[in-house]
Image (cartoon, rainbow, N blue to C red; front, side, top):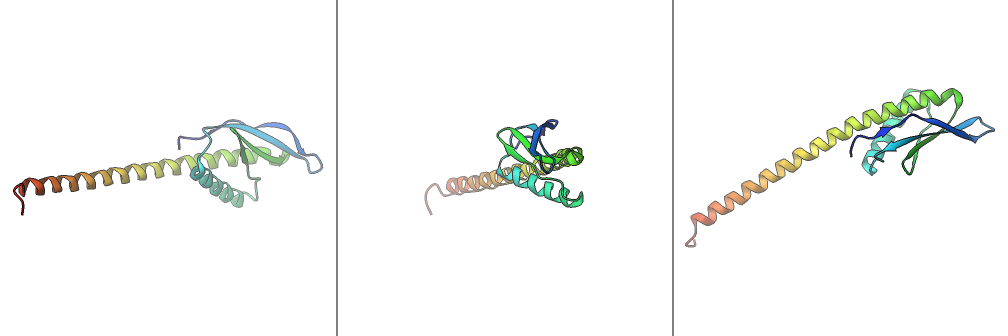
Length: 127
Protein backbone atom coordinates (compact mmCIF):
# COMPACT_ATOMS: atom_id res chain seq x y z
CA UNK A 1 0.00 0.00 0.00
CA UNK A 2 1.41 3.34 -0.98
CA UNK A 3 1.25 6.19 1.49
CA UNK A 4 -2.36 7.21 1.85
CA UNK A 5 -2.94 10.94 1.77
CA UNK A 6 -6.12 12.53 3.07
CA UNK A 7 -6.86 16.10 2.05
CA UNK A 8 -8.52 18.77 4.14
CA UNK A 9 -12.08 18.09 5.21
CA UNK A 10 -14.80 20.41 3.94
CA UNK A 11 -18.42 20.66 5.13
CA UNK A 12 -20.97 19.40 2.62
CA UNK A 13 -24.22 20.24 4.42
CA UNK A 14 -26.19 18.77 7.26
CA UNK A 15 -26.38 15.00 7.43
CA UNK A 16 -28.77 15.14 10.40
CA UNK A 17 -30.13 18.65 10.99
CA UNK A 18 -32.04 17.62 14.14
CA UNK A 19 -28.82 16.53 15.83
CA UNK A 20 -26.71 19.23 14.22
CA UNK A 21 -24.47 16.74 12.42
CA UNK A 22 -22.65 18.05 9.39
CA UNK A 23 -21.18 15.85 6.64
CA UNK A 24 -17.48 16.47 6.02
CA UNK A 25 -15.56 15.15 3.02
CA UNK A 26 -11.90 14.97 2.02
CA UNK A 27 -10.19 13.35 -0.93
CA UNK A 28 -8.19 10.23 -0.20
CA UNK A 29 -5.52 8.81 -2.49
CA UNK A 30 -4.74 6.10 -2.97
CA UNK A 31 -7.72 4.35 -1.41
CA UNK A 32 -6.32 1.85 1.14
CA UNK A 33 -6.50 -1.86 0.39
CA UNK A 34 -8.40 -4.14 2.78
CA UNK A 35 -5.39 -4.62 5.09
CA UNK A 36 -4.65 -0.90 5.13
CA UNK A 37 -8.28 -0.08 5.83
CA UNK A 38 -8.43 -2.57 8.73
CA UNK A 39 -5.26 -1.06 10.23
CA UNK A 40 -6.72 2.40 9.77
CA UNK A 41 -9.95 1.33 11.47
CA UNK A 42 -7.97 0.00 14.44
CA UNK A 43 -6.01 3.27 14.70
CA UNK A 44 -9.22 5.28 14.48
CA UNK A 45 -10.91 3.24 17.20
CA UNK A 46 -7.86 3.62 19.46
CA UNK A 47 -7.80 7.36 18.81
CA UNK A 48 -11.55 7.58 19.41
CA UNK A 49 -11.15 5.79 22.75
CA UNK A 50 -8.35 8.15 23.75
CA UNK A 51 -10.23 11.27 22.69
CA UNK A 52 -13.74 10.42 23.92
CA UNK A 53 -15.55 8.90 20.96
CA UNK A 54 -14.66 10.90 17.90
CA UNK A 55 -16.95 9.89 14.99
CA UNK A 56 -15.48 7.20 12.74
CA UNK A 57 -15.11 7.99 9.03
CA UNK A 58 -16.04 5.89 6.04
CA UNK A 59 -14.73 5.76 2.50
CA UNK A 60 -17.09 6.44 -0.40
CA UNK A 61 -15.21 6.01 -3.66
CA UNK A 62 -12.12 8.19 -3.39
CA UNK A 63 -13.57 10.38 -0.63
CA UNK A 64 -13.30 9.98 3.14
CA UNK A 65 -16.49 11.08 4.90
CA UNK A 66 -17.56 11.64 8.49
CA UNK A 67 -20.60 13.15 10.17
CA UNK A 68 -20.11 15.25 13.29
CA UNK A 69 -21.48 18.24 15.13
CA UNK A 70 -19.67 21.49 14.35
CA UNK A 71 -17.99 21.44 17.76
CA UNK A 72 -16.27 18.09 17.02
CA UNK A 73 -15.35 18.63 13.37
CA UNK A 74 -11.83 20.00 13.83
CA UNK A 75 -10.90 17.44 16.48
CA UNK A 76 -12.27 14.62 14.32
CA UNK A 77 -10.30 15.76 11.27
CA UNK A 78 -7.12 15.97 13.37
CA UNK A 79 -7.68 12.47 14.76
CA UNK A 80 -8.29 11.06 11.27
CA UNK A 81 -5.12 12.64 9.87
CA UNK A 82 -3.08 11.35 12.83
CA UNK A 83 -4.52 7.84 12.42
CA UNK A 84 -3.71 7.88 8.69
CA UNK A 85 -0.10 8.87 9.47
CA UNK A 86 0.22 6.03 12.01
CA UNK A 87 -1.30 3.56 9.56
CA UNK A 88 1.11 4.64 6.82
CA UNK A 89 4.02 4.01 9.20
CA UNK A 90 2.70 0.56 10.14
CA UNK A 91 2.04 -0.40 6.51
CA UNK A 92 5.57 0.66 5.56
CA UNK A 93 6.88 -1.63 8.31
CA UNK A 94 4.73 -4.52 7.07
CA UNK A 95 5.89 -4.00 3.50
CA UNK A 96 9.52 -4.00 4.66
CA UNK A 97 8.92 -7.28 6.54
CA UNK A 98 7.37 -8.81 3.42
CA UNK A 99 10.33 -7.67 1.31
CA UNK A 100 12.77 -9.25 3.78
CA UNK A 101 10.76 -12.49 3.81
CA UNK A 102 10.79 -12.62 0.00
CA UNK A 103 14.57 -12.07 -0.01
CA UNK A 104 15.11 -14.78 2.60
CA UNK A 105 12.90 -17.21 0.64
CA UNK A 106 14.80 -16.42 -2.56
CA UNK A 107 18.13 -17.12 -0.80
CA UNK A 108 16.82 -20.45 0.50
CA UNK A 109 15.65 -21.42 -2.99
CA UNK A 110 18.95 -20.36 -4.58
CA UNK A 111 20.93 -22.35 -1.99
CA UNK A 112 18.78 -25.44 -2.55
CA UNK A 113 19.17 -25.11 -6.32
CA UNK A 114 22.96 -24.79 -5.94
CA UNK A 115 23.14 -27.83 -3.65
CA UNK A 116 21.10 -29.85 -6.15
CA UNK A 117 23.28 -28.73 -9.04
CA UNK A 118 26.45 -29.58 -7.07
CA UNK A 119 25.04 -33.00 -6.17
CA UNK A 120 24.10 -33.68 -9.80
CA UNK A 121 27.57 -32.59 -10.93
CA UNK A 122 29.21 -34.83 -8.36
CA UNK A 123 27.11 -37.80 -9.37
CA UNK A 124 27.08 -37.39 -13.17
CA UNK A 125 27.80 -41.04 -13.67
CA UNK A 126 25.11 -42.13 -11.26
CA UNK A 127 25.20 -43.43 -7.76
